[in-house]
Length: 398
Image (cartoon, rainbow, N blue to C red):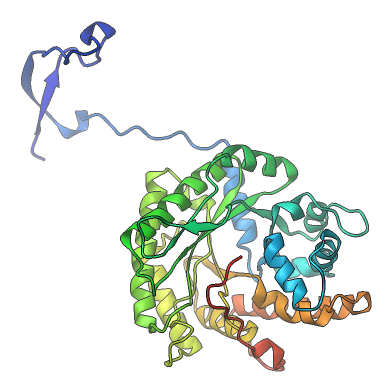
């Protein structure tokens, strides 16, 4: 191999005497030397996180066969909207009753490996006084925590948003770890009808990368979630084009921030047409486009891809996941659903104590269906009309 020419300055490290405030650096003599590339200085490598082994173990536990994530991290305001849909007031007692129903469903851990909680829930107890975190652990479910502070307008963009919450994140994630959380979630969004602008994509990617690095330093596996919103009339090819750009940017900045890929989980949108597009896609088309995206952009070191439902119907989200698991994938391809697991459950409960068991059965039915889909064994037989109803809400806010 040809040798390289390098400039060598002496001295190589500047002493305080080498500079004076307000003056330029003193020139030093420069000579040209020839050396082999093996003598070139190496890059500085960041030391591994003291939680590295634990992060890998947690990520693999969440990404375990036949299981996925129950997203129950709705803010109190959003939870209030859900409760209002069944005629209940948005009180802490009603939120506690509903969350108790979810986490105490018998055998839930057979299908659910992780549960994303809102901050109130992380510190909350069930109606009978047991800590919700402890109930989850007893069910063999890893507790997680939503750590972002929501979306705000992005100045200088095409009426787009950015996600806030980096200020104070290190201290908050450390406290969440002490409370029992072992993974975290940060949701930012990209809007196709509004561009997306290069500014919005870069802001989303950088924020996710900083959050991921901070979370890993605190012992929490970061779920990386740049949601490409369903809003719009665009076709599936446009979604694919935007998703490629977004994920390229995300992984560039994850690497720049020294995030350990083996200790993260992804929560992407499936590649689908816009919700208002007249040309709908079959589960096989969604699977083909989505898997093609993953193969082009996601390193195999990442243990799990936990898809969001994004307003799809319960059945649609399950059928699409099942189609993606008809052949082996380099990653665990699974789910992290909120409405697509809870919609029928919530309506079945209706706020009535006598309906708790029936509501839990509805939750378990959906959890089992998605467990089968993760294994590629879901058939769609016997699904209710309620489960087939779409849940897209234009401009949906958590």
